[in-house]
Each structure stands twice: as structure tokens, then as C-alpha cells.
Image (cartoon, rainbow, N blue to C red; front, side, top):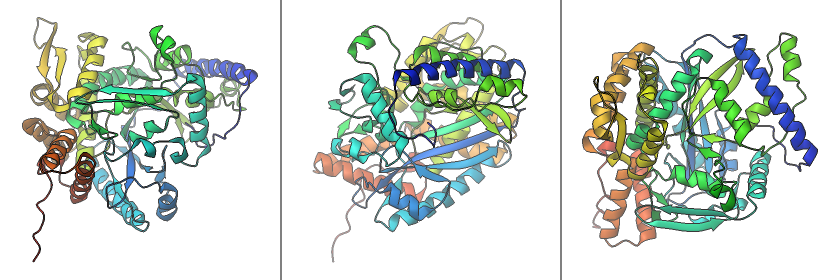
Amino acid sequence: MGEKVVAGRFDLSDRQRYRDKLRRCLTGLERLLAEQRFDRPQNLMGLEIELNLVGTDGMPRMLNGEVLERIASRDFQTELAMFNLEVNIAPHRLGGRVFDRLAEELRTSLAYADRKAGEVDAGIVMIGILPTLDRDDLVSSNLSDVDRYTLLNDQIVAARGEDFVLDIDGVERLTCTSKSIAPEAACTSVQLHLQVTPGRFADVWNAAQAVAGVQIAVGANSPFLFGRELWCESRPPLFQQSTDTRPPELQAQGVRPRTWFGERWISSAYDLFEENLRYFPALLPICDEEDPLQVLDQGGVPSLAELVLHNGTVYRWNRPVYGIADGVPHLRVENRVLPAGPTITDVIANAAFYYGLVRALAEEPRPVWSRLPFEAAAANFDAACRYGIDARMVWPRRGRHGGTVEVDAVTLVRDELLPLADAGLAGWGVEPADRDLYLGVIEERCRRRANGASWQAATFHRAREAGLSRDAALAATTRRYSELMRQGEPVHTWPVGLPEPVPLG
């Protein structure tokens, strides 16, 4: 959303000028694409992980300012609420033992950050939604002390014009209201970036959309919110509802939500940027001095600042990104589907599965999106969020007969998608040792039908059966999760339940 956003008020002329600048930016993007000005293939990937600050009692700690001051590294930055941080790993070239190197970098970075957090009696936890969060934790006074978050909150609240309604019906039902976007901060995710050429962008984005449901099925890790057990991956409905600028009347008219799966396969990156202008009014109409078309006329590379800012306020699960590195523009697909955690090994396994799978699917002669209705991909995503590892998916039928078939997600992954992911990673030049290790983690999750969400839910219910109250069971589950996360073994190996108390004497 831009690091240099400064809080302020906007008038009608600001919005009109911004809309004009957005159109000029879109024209500039169209010219860049037509003139083939984008970077050549570099096989570059990037990784961001959103984190929670938690006390030894398992409760959230509103201390990101103090912790960041102690960490003192550009790799770490604020996120929306005071109990959030984000770590950014520098881009890596896909190939060789890249995933092992990434895992080692993350272990070093997170161990250091965890030690620094310990200086203020907090620790770092990677989890989709912290089970111990309470409604009183997610209020505007707990937003990070950064102008862009304040301004974004003010603009979304003003656009909606009334309280946000959270209504998620899962294992249990949660209904409540919020006066701010603070509940969005409960959602902590992993963002996977892949730099692609314009000619490859549509195929990679379509492939990423096609497998978003599968990613959630094997990687779900967010079953609890405000003390209720909801969907296996409750982040998507929570994120949509907590950023929804549409009052009920606009929802009834079919106006699109800003957190959005999308509605069609695409043929160019331009399609997505154009849709963002056509469907979504500006939230932050902040204008840059640059004239993008004049910069292009002079042979330069425009920053397209307004387009980039606006794009950051439309929350697609696979988002297009325009960037400039060393004076050369490039495009990235930002995959925002996955929750954080449970362990570094699990995060890297999810990443390896994704990068291998999208490459293989993007290169198929009969691409999956030519055989799978977009509505089926969206329904798969919804089913995976609800049912996690037990979800059933609609997928193109193998063989000459065509059509689609409904299949267990774990069967689809083991029989069809893991071999594709392995081939895709081989195409990137990833060594067999990395492929076997990390894709083996996904295979074991499928074999055992176990992921972060299933472990959390099973451990919580064991704690309740042992006589703990709901709040005590959630706190105990969180503490046990934190302990096992630090030990680092992948989640499919975690023993369900709380450790037996050590007898005294």
C-alpha cells in the first residue's frame, strides 16, 4: 500500500485527479507491454511471512514497535495491528538447493527475531489466525502506529458508512460487528512472489487460480476466531468481510468485494489492472507528480505510482504486481492464498509445491483452465477453506473423454498434482534432494490427512475432553503449538493433544 502514505483528508478534486492519473497509468502499462519493455526471464521468487507476537501465556502482545526497534533489520516491518510483524526474504533464483537455503535463512531470521521479542516477554508465532485473539484485541486503538494503516482504515470505514458485519457459519457460528478494519489483522499469511514475463503472466496467474483450492486444502491453518471453531481456513471469509466497503444494498446489486477470488480466466496481466480500475473506486487518492506518458515519451520507465497504490487496495488471492528493479520494469504474480506456519519446513514445503505446480500447469499443451470452468475453481477454493484436508474438488477428468470429476483433494494431490509439481521443480532446475524432501512433506500430510488446522482442532477438543474451559483450551493449544513450531518438525508429525503433566515429587 506504499510506505510513504501520509494521513490526510481528500476532497472531490483529489478523487477526480486520481482517476485521471489512474487512466494515464493504465495507458502507460499498455504501452510498456506493447513496446516489450519488461525484464527478461530470471526465474526469481520471493517470500513474505506475516507473524504474531504472543506472550508465554499464549495471548497476543501489542508490542511490534518495541520488538522492531530491537530487531533493527530492514527485513522486518510492521503489519496492520500491534501484535503483527512481517519478515521479507530477498528474492532468490529458483534452482539448485534453493528451498534448503530459504529454510536456513528463515530459521536464522526468525530465531533472531524471537530472541529480540523475548526481551519484552513476547515470542514469534507463525499461525493463520491466533486462537487466543479476542474481539477486544481487534479494535482501532490496536492498529500499528503508521499513517497508512490509519488512513486506510478511515477510508474503508467511510466508504462502507456503517459497522462491518462478521458472519461465518462453520463448525460453530460467529456473528459480531466491528467499527474498524482491525479484524483483518487476525489474518496472517505467506505471500509467494514469482517474477514472470508478460507473455507468461496469464498462464501462470490462471494456473495459480486453478490450484488455490488445493493449496488451502493441504495448507489450512486457521480454524479458530474469537473463541469459535469456524472453517478450516477462516482467513478468506474474515478478510473479505472485514474489508468490505459494500453496505448490504451494494452487495445485493452484485457490486464486487475488494477481497476477491475473481470471476474469469485472463489472457494478459493488463486484464487484471484494468478490472481493478473498472470495478473499484479509489480508497487512497494520493497523486504522484510523475506524468507516466511523458516519462515514456522521453524513453524512461514510469513508476505508475497511482496504479501500484490502487492495486494494493484490491485484495485478490493472486495479485498482479508491477515493479522496477535496476531501472527495468517487471511483473510478478503474488500468491496470497496460504496461511502462515505451522513450521518453517511446512512453509517451504507449501512454497515448493506451489512453484512446481504452477510451472508444470502453465506449460501443459491443454491447460487446466481450458478444461475447468472458472466457477469450479472458485467453488474449490471455497470448499477447501471450509473443509481443509477433507475437501472434495472438481477437476478435469483424465483421458480423452473430457469433462470434470469430483475427487478428494488428497487423492488429487497424491495421484496427479505431486508428480506435476516434481516435474515443474525439475524444470526450474531444483535438485532432487530438495524436491523429495519438501514434496514429501505434502505427500505425508495427504497420507495422514493432517495439517495445521486438523492438529489445532483435534488438540483443542482433547483439551476440552480433559476438562479445560474453552478459553483455557484455546490458550493451552496455542502454547503447545508454539512449542512444537519452535522444535521445527513438520506438522503432520505432531502428536495430537497436550503433553502429560509431570507429576510432582
